[in-house]
Every structure is written in structure tokens, then in C-alpha cells.
Image (cartoon, rainbow, N blue to C red; front, side):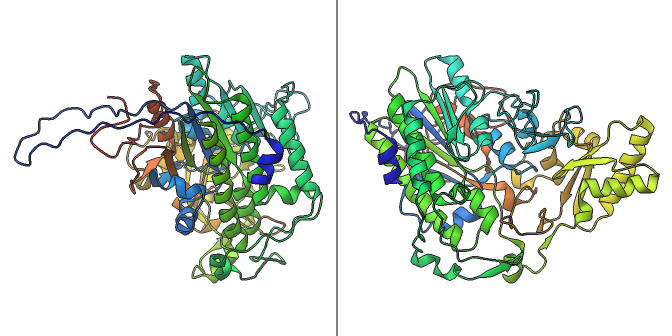
Length: 557
């Protein structure tokens, strides 16, 4: 991390910002009646820079597993306001929907980002699948080679709200994935960069700042060198056990990388280090937090997700990743400290996950299983078409969304829907199958997220313009991977809490630490951050979380 920063950045420092203080109120005598009164507004002054970090696939379970081992950046965050039971409360626990909630305050049903991809039968392409961060209207764009766009995000981000209130606000977004950068940055950004496979890239026509060029040069030099095995911390040794999945051995990896292997670089701790190095460089070069208005920086660290999918969560690979990520965060915070800027950090995740099925089965979970291929929408549609005397498949689908071929006559579509419902509800691996009408008739839930019914979870990520005519949800411990292998042995996307629960952490110098174990939602993040800068917001799904553990409140009166 430090080597990357040194190569990519030019160091700059500023005088330390003046520290803020809290006001205290003397307690009333125990026998004196205390009249009801609104909580006093906290005396904390607004920060000059908001830093919002998403660690892709950092589940609450993974965070809990390693929180006692953190000594770097995470240790600092644990000395702030800790919400270990945050929820990406919706059913579609994928990367794009999750990132769309973090800085908008809206659930996917309102952001319009219902999945990483969905079916749009109006799209002029054979598979009719549209990616969440593309503009399919661009000639030649397709699901595999697309033009990155924010067009599908239906709501504003915090950065957009800040810029509307004060145009002097700078909005910067950097990530290892385009969808993370776009969904956290929003429609109006000053700088937006993501890892493009060989370097950091942005929208066509955007001028590359010098710091991005330096970061790309430093990262290219790193990739050009072979990576020897990373050290294995002593506490990781109990996880140093091999397991064979799909004919390949996993569980004992050390991120050895051949010179020039950019794909292996992406699936390694070094990828996150490069993202944080670029983020730090943009802070320095743009002097974020030193202008006339509060600025906001979104950072999407994607390596945990790539490593989880490739190796699972319970081998040496993830243990090393957690250790290196902790160090990268520490190095990043050191750079922020050196600027003297008064900054506020929020860290969360876009979704959770749990370990590979095969390793789960070895560890007291013999009921774990892979989804059968005949659960896939196209296979179900082929069987229905055959029985109805129709050609091909009458269904299309992505993950749990099932779409009926809209070229069929209306009467036929009704029959197909009825048969699709019947078949899915009879499947042993399906927990529930809901029609669009059933989901839309369900009010948006208002109770604690762990208490939501399955249909309420589905409602939170259902958009009638983009979701399927049927949503089918797998039973717990059934992974949507039909056959593991080829670097894809673990995933997420279910409505179950191992995929929904994520940590939410807030830190700022001078913030009195506390922990609240009760559930909150990632949609609560935007109004919480807005309150700390005195920005009035309304209309969102989330609520403000009070970051003052005493009688005062950081939320609006």
C-alpha cells in the first residue's frame, strides 16, 4: 500500500484542523421530575470531507470473524459508531442494487437497480439482458462489451444533493468496479474512475488527471512484476487446509502471481491497495475538504468480492485479504490525516455472502447444496413450451427474476404464467415464488429488517418496469451456482440474512465511540451523513442514525 501511494502520489500536507468539542449538560437530581423535551442538537460541527467506503462482499459474519484481529484501519473505525447488524434489507443481494442504496437512502425498488442485470425484451440484442451500469441505447453496446452509464439509476445520491445545495461541493468516486463507482457517485460527479482491467478508466471524453496517470503507471509497474507468496499471519494457520472443488484445490492460496497477470492482480489484495492509492491521490491533488464547501469521496473496494467468488471465505486467501485490507485502510487514513482535513468516514458493504458449498458441507452443514439446473428460467420455459406445443423457451430470466416471452399472445402468456407459478412452487429448492401482482400489492415494510417476510424482502427490490413477472427465491443454504469451478465457487444474491447483513461503521476524530447491536439499514447511511453536514433531506426510505451516544442528537430536531 505505502509503495503504491509513494509511486502514484505527490505528498501534500496542511495544518491540522481545529478540533471540535461537545457540550455537556449537568444531570438532574434523581428525585426531580424531568419534563419531556426534544434532545439538544449535538455541538459537533460539520466535517469538511465525507469519505464513504464500500467493501464489496464484506458480510457481517466475515466482519465478526475478523474484528478481533484488526490492528490497522478497521481498528480505527471500531473506535467510532459501530452498527454490526446493518442490512441490505432487500431480496436481490447483488453488487449493483447494494451500492445503489448506500449513498441514495433508497431501496432498489426505488433506485430502479433491481439486480446486476435484468431482462429488457425491448433491447435490440439476442439475449435481451441489460447490465445495470450500461447505456444499451449506444450502438454496439452489449452485455459483454458495454458503454458505462448512470442512466438506470432513478434517484439522486448524497453527492448530487450536496452539489445542488452548494455547487462548490466536489463529488469524487473511485472503485474496482464500474457499477460501484457509478452507483455511489451518481449522475453529477467531478471525477469518476474504475478499474478497467489494465488501468483506471472513466466515461469516454473525460480528461485523465495527472494523478490517475501516475496511479496507472504505478499499478502497471506492479502488475509487470511477479508477486511472491504473501505471508500467512499466524492466526490464519487453522484455515490452511486444502479442499478440492471442481477438480481444483482451494484453501491454501497466497496470491502468487506471474508477471503481467492482470486478471490475478484483480483477484488479490493489491487491487484494493491501488484503489485506495488513487483515492488518496485525488484527495491530495484536488485538495478535497479544503474548499468552500464540504466535499464527498466514494471508494469502492472490490477485491473481497472477487476473492470470495474465486476462493470462498474460509481459506487462507480470505484471511490474508482481511489482513491486507486492514493495512490498506490504515495507509489511506494516514494520507487523509496528513492533509489536516476534518473528515468523516463511513464504511459498509453492498451485500454479504457465505462460504463455498463443498466446504460448508465439511463443516457441519451437510444440507448445503447447489441449485439444480432445471430451476433456471430458460430450462423451465423450455419444458413448459414443449408441453404446450410451443417452440424454444417461453421464459427468460436472471437470478430470481422470471420473465414471460412478450411476443406470445396475451391468452398464452396468462397460461404460461399460471404454469410457471405451479412449477416453481412445486420445486423442492424453492422457498417461495411470488407474482408481480402479489409483490406490488405488498406495502413497503416498516418493521426491523430481520423480521421481514420473504415477500416484503422481494418488495424492497421490485421495480415493475424492470423486474420479472415472477420472482422465485431459493431456500436457505441453496447456492445459485449450478456447478462450482473455474474460479467461481461461492456467491450471494439470496434473501437470507447471511447475504443481507453487513457492518456499518462511522468514524470521525472526536466522535465518542459506541456500539448499537440492533438492526439498521444501509438506506439509513445517506440521511445520517446528510445530518452531520446540516443538509436537509427528505423522501428517502432510510432514517437518520444518531451518532451522539449521549442525550444530544446528530439528527434533525
